[in-house]
Length: 192
Image (cartoon, rainbow, N blue to C red; front, side, top):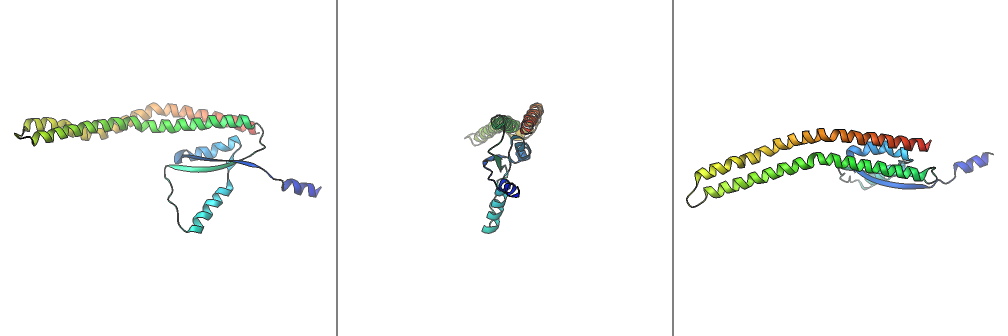
């Protein structure tokens, strides 16, 4: 009887592995959610990266924007197909969250840069007016005013548009987080 228990303890467990790269601010969400689909953090990867840093003596520069997470999952998992489908839904929700976060700053940046470029064009025209053979001072002043406004206004416009876009996007992000919660809850129910 004791020999059978030792055989069962020493039995081989096959794992499948997954490596994901996510933005650093979403890494905690992924570490908390992937166990709902049968994944666990790969304990061997932590030791491997620690050993690599200590053996070489040189610390590699880490990317600040993204983080790579390593997971493993038992190959003999029940409901594996349904868990994989839920995991794909989760991954698409995380991608949509990333896109929503990026969209907060994309359009405001485009607007601010456009106004800055137009302001620079006015300043260039003002400069050409002052260096003309007979200098046209009144045209220089007339063109310099929108030029300076085109250089000053983008900062304030960018801040205002980011606040406005954030207020539009926050409810959508909350809906995505609720959807992620529902998906993880379904995955946990399939595991137990």
